[in-house]
Length: 416
Image (tube, rainbow, N blue to C red; front, side):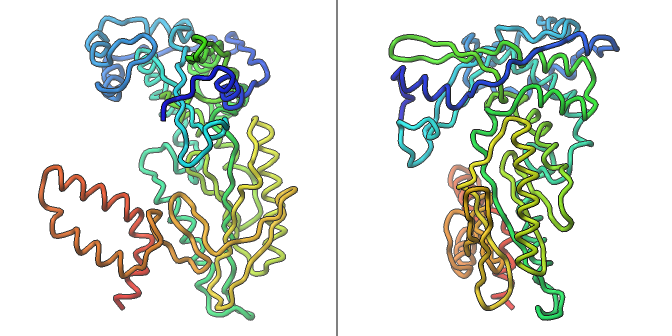
């Protein structure tokens, strides 16, 4: 479906998806001084390699392959670092709206916004990204699994599931070591477009990012402009917060600010597991009343942190699953401010269904483990062949059997 063109609807979508934030006051003087290492040819070539030749160009219309060929004659990147200025022409972003599946087209929340940026600006972003990432990666908390090397969604699911398995793996319930595990998934409203810029800058300072890099990020934020086309002509909108979805720096800036949430001091045996903005609360307790108390404390800490950085929770979308090995199915009802959330037998977490007895199945459909086993046998004899059909089979296996080392224990039990 094409993007909407009605100016009234588009204005409403833009104002909803890009909410106005308090004015960001940039004070570049606080980051002056210190040695600024020059960008090396190796850094520049590495940044260029990450730009796809066939990717759509930005507002300047210059094809990526042409820009990469001319990159050796572009010395202005070092000048940008020296001056602490991210050029204004590279801070213009063209809006592309993607309608979410089965959502009404007249509702702003039904759209996922992408920001198309000039490739030359993306190369400068990549150079900044490489240096900031090298500085902050060792300091970022371990339970953020999104946008990071050697970490994946499957690792996050595995952490949550293994915590549950250990909780119910004791010897008995009465006077024994078996316990409950509660998993609660939280939904953040319009997360990437709502984070406050001043809070992102404060997070950079806490992680000891070098001053000249903080100055570049500060310039990157200031005076950003969103452009979009309507039936009455092109429009401009002043962006005052968030991280541009589709930019190079977007994932790293998100991880830097979200690190504050994941480092909150929580009650014992309570952890947060995050993949990008998706966050789950995992609590292990012996008694359900104690579980409720701990969740209330944890939720309030999370809510206060969200408020402090310009984010808010969609409380009505909170989901919970109570994991236990008891034969009697039990539930727990949690108070989420004005909402009461009762645990459900299955919830979907990062495309995997998690059930009350730690049974896991892939997101493409809740199917019996015997069916999975048979379909794998049908596909495997042909996996060695190359070509288009082999590529289709590999895509089928990946999409249909996501995270097999997690749900594979179901098959192992049947084989035994």
